[in-house]
Length: 112
Ligand code: DGP
Image 1 (cartoon, rainbow, N blue to C red):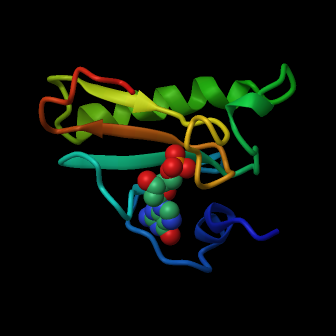
Image 2 (cartoon, rainbow, N blue to C red):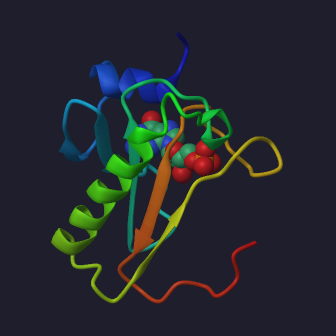
Image 3 (tube, rainbow, N blue to C red):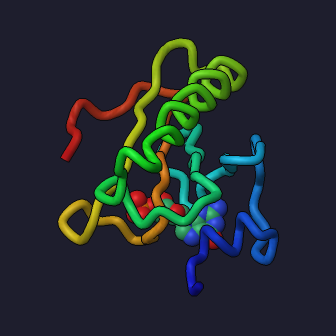
């Protein structure tokens, strides 16, 4: 499958990894939009949040557990933002579900 995040998960494309287990990978975004900006992705290819079903939704709870742990470890105690873009109107450029974690500084009050 021609998916850049599947290639990162497989190790075919290098990334700056923060965390990995059997279900998720976290790595720094190549184009940071905040002082700290990393992505958390399921290893299973799910195209976007629009593809979440009762069969695969368990991964979402796990991803948010990982985000909370990484945020604590990476000094984001003052707060951070979690974003997932969906589809063309959501400006999703990589069609593999991913959660942006942005922080390390005061973020814009504007969400869109
Ligand atoms: P989105 O626009 O929500 O689909 O975000 C995709 C993000 O993925 C974007 O912030 C840039 C990042 N990205 C794209 N290609 C790569 C890559 O090869 N390596 C890393 N580390 N990040 C990437």
